[in-house]
Structure formats: structure tokens, C-alpha cells
Image (cartoon, rainbow, N blue to C red; front, side, top):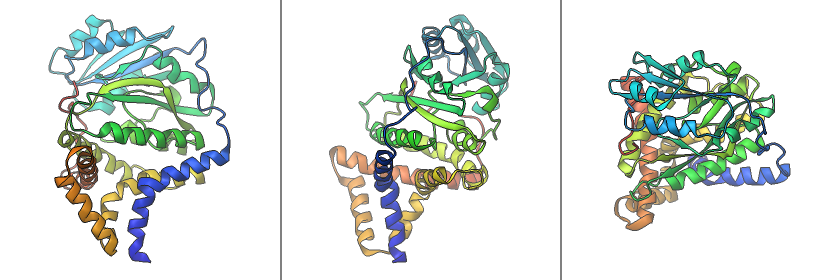
Length: 356
């Protein structure tokens, strides 16, 4: 039976978990606070945009923020060691505050923006993400609940002409996130559109991004971390599967420090329900490539692995692309760990190819 355990855990992590959440949500009954109406008079918001050499997009980003349907919005561009015209273009576009910072990485740039923010709700967005007009109004609506400390919105990827299958994966991920939010708190967010209460903001290690470190850490501190799908942003995806693999490998080199020494594996402070979500969505997700290796002990799993690799290498059309995307995603998890252990992780970051 033990030789079947890795294969069973893989099946649960990749498909069974979604079924469990759907059944669980059905038993819980109709949601009560998942989508509260956007308040007529939303609170003032400070929007922090961390940017490193974003001269090609920062003007459009600031102008997009200026058009948001929010009565009081402070726009802060935190320039992380920019060597191009990002600072000048952000000021010319009308940002309220432009911080010209030494190179310290995205997280430290965000820290500096939060420190200077005037408002109690601080939102964050990537320089290449464009927000819909009502995005921030919708994003701050869940803060009507005093237990909510973190809210992430929905990012939609554009540029479907390439080979990348991130859009397919992302729709699946958003379904998981919606159920997790309804049943307790989300286990991860995204950098395109999210917000926190300033009092709940955490200063984390500069190699540990907010996307993974904020939700579980805020839950441990007694806050809820929720998903607001009506708060929408769009962002260009990496056009190719190979480019997506490189992006995910870099992301995982930042994620593994959070998993190993950032507290994600420490169950202290997790409500029992949330501990199950973390184990199912995060622990098993990052254990995926190693479970694949363990599953080879079972003969049918070996055959399935051979078929998967053959499809990734040889199958034409969409089926081959999906198989290749899955194989490279699993490889990126393992290689991200290798990169972190072997070389460490730098706090700085650069834009993924084809996303600007």
C-alpha cells in the first residue's frame, strides 16, 4: 500500500483537492461574505507600484491608476534602483509620490512605499498590470469585515497567441482560490492586484515575495485572507512554455525559502481547517516532483509517467502543449529548490521576457 501513497497523493493534489473543496462548499451552504457589495464611499487607498527599469510601461500604468473609480487614491511608485527613465516618466505621468531607491529588491521597494503611504488600506500592483476602472473599489469591499486583513483580486492573462498554457492552469488555480476564500482563507495571492490593512502589513525577508508569504502569515496572526474575483486586472503572459518554465523556476527559488524557513510548514497558529488547505494546496504542490519520483515504485504509475513524458515530447497540438507545460512546471519546482540550495536567491528581479 505504501508504494501507492505517492501516486494517491499526486492524484489528490492535482484533481481530488478541487473535488473536496466543491463538496465541502456545498455542505457549508450559500456564501455569506464572499462578494459583499462595493461600498458607496470606499476608504482612501494608497496604491504602491514597485518598479525596476519599467520605462516602457510606467506611464501607462500611472495613467491607468489615475482613471480608477475611487474618490481618494494616493499613487506611489517605488523605483528599485532604476537605471532608465522610470523615475522621470512616473513623475510626468502624475504619480503622487515617486521614490528613487537604491537597488534592494521588490519587497524592500514595497516596504518603502508602505512606510510613506498616507492611508490605512494599502494596495499593490505590478507595473505591467492594468486595472479595470472599478478594480480597487471592488478590492477594498471585503475590508468592511474587520477580520479581513488581506484581499487579492483576479488577474487575467492576455497574449494567447503563443504556446504558453498558463491561462489554462490559472483558471484552475482561481477555482481553488475561490473555494478556499469561501471556506476560510486563501493560501496564496498574486502580485497584479492585492491589498492589506497597513496595520496588518508584514516586513518579510527580501527574497520572500508577498504572494506566498502574506496570506498564511496573516492567518496565523488572526486575520482572514480572501479572494475578490470582481476586482480584475490584466497582464501579458510569457508567450512560450519555455519562457514560462524560466519564470516559474525563478519564482520557486523565492518560494522555497518561505516553505523551508519562512513558517509555511510550521502548523502553529493555523486553524485546523486552514492547515488542511495549506497541506493540500501548498505542501503537496511543492512536493509534486518528488512524489512523481516516489510513484515510480508502482508499475501503473511508471506507465503513466512514460505516457506523460512521451506526450510532452511528441504529441501534437493542444494535448502536447498541456503535457509539456505540466512536465516543465514540475521540473521548475525541483530546479527552483536546486537553485536556492546551490546558489541562494537574490532579492532583485527582472521582468520576464515578453511580458512588457
